[in-house]
Image 1: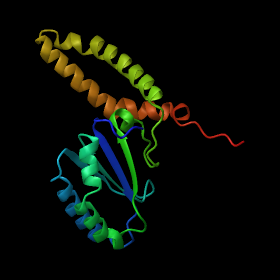
Image 2: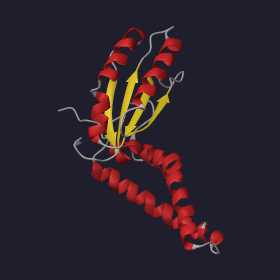
Image 3: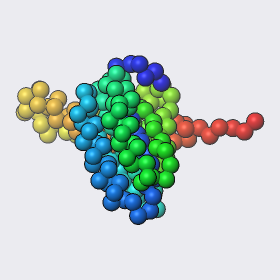
Image 4: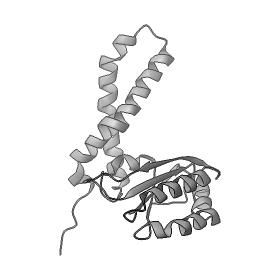
Length: 187
């Protein structure tokens, strides 16, 4: 993937916290995310905490509006300082992965973030949008027919994005898992 493009970028950082250091790690996490918010282009930070039996690592997700702003944060002295402050709390160096755009829809829970080829992402996204927009137009539009066209469009697009993000694409990713992530054949 070409990281020089000016799209919204996401960095997913995963680390395993040493047993007994969770409270200190949470405090450290609060501090480093507070500092990251001061950087130009920061769009948000999310934290996915460990779940017993599912995953044992923390995933910290930083979103920035473009490559240059992300690079400024990733190479900053502030970030370096906070990483050094938290080293004693984690079992190993963090795993850092960068993604952009729709690729985040195609990650599998509990597995390292790998993205399939863009043509596969485009095909599955198009298919999901095609089916969903036709279903929404068939079942929702008649219920809101008296609304102004702009409001109808607003309701349909909000519903579609929420369904794509939380319902459709996670299921599509699992359904097409073997096509998106083919196993490497041994030679």
